[in-house]
Figure 1 (cartoon, helix red, strand yellow):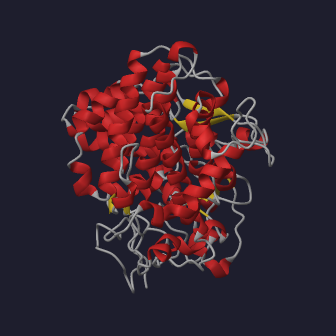
Figure 2: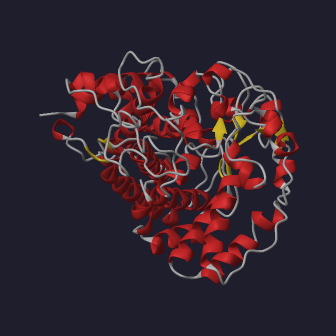
Figure 3: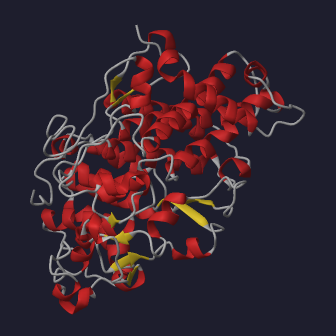
Length: 501
């Protein structure tokens, strides 16, 4: 009999203790678990720390598979081995080394630990509230705390479901002693139900979050919109292939996007330093000069005259030395020509003539700048995609033509009478507008459309360290020869590109 205590004991303990050490609770020094969970001040402080715990994991690099997803999706490319990027973007693809001794095992191990730490803390908050503890004068802050806890339950369970093949979804009522692993689908379903509970609270109570909880004074109405958009994300991005994408409840996606964000969802970065809480290492490292670059696949999308793969003959074989001639205005505003490349021994297929510049203001401001977690156009494009699946092509085209395609790209409006043109325009806009906002978007989009390179893993296995605690055999996904996992469900086949062996 496997219990969650046995499986997750290490990181739940570490996660809670580290969370307690950061609690800003007046007149409480080094609070122990029982004290925190039995006091209104402790529960409120714990609830107030949840989003930051989640943010630090979702927007990190050492504690996240985000960088390796970015290169697996062939949006970005690097010649540096950090974060497992070189290993997981090899051509042909190789399987993921899911052993505790693997140098970059920490990226999925820490992600797993930290997401479940958020989930455990959110469950603890709700357990305390369900015992009758009220927050604020006459309990006036109780709905705010409860709604935040439900939202963070959903984001923690949901992102485990997006990244891993299975998980241990739970809420405040779960019997942890008898909890068994289940498919990622159960994690996604529970996450959606938890976010819906949060929305119900947000829609029926008026409040404004303390600014330190999410760096800005978000209202209950703001949080409702954010939660709706995250539900749409989970519903769409959890698909592992095109067949699953086609069976999504697109009417529900449409409903959630119609109630979703109406402006970019961003928090305020607080600089670079060991004492900072709101830093996006993901954006910084993937986009900074002399580090991450733009894969030739994306350059080819902007200028079809440029090849989608770096030529064997090198830079001289690229038209116009690899300089884009694109009708898309973003080729000039969001990308910068840079033909410098290095480490040929790691594969010249990683080379490129451009880097991504849209986050240069953030990088140059030394992290003292807004951190965009979800752009309004992402919600709009999910709405447009839902409309295409509901055969409402004219409505979908109207959203696209009122958005970034025309306003930022200065491209002609898409033809509303051709469904293929509309869906092509949607994914072109997603490729250009959404990189490095939410973790893994580029990867999730390629995954759900059967476009990841052959041999790419479609989700990560349970981290080997957790399997070791369980005394279960290690397993993994990915690769071509050998290949691990069910083709089309665990490992990509027939993707956009099949490199020669």
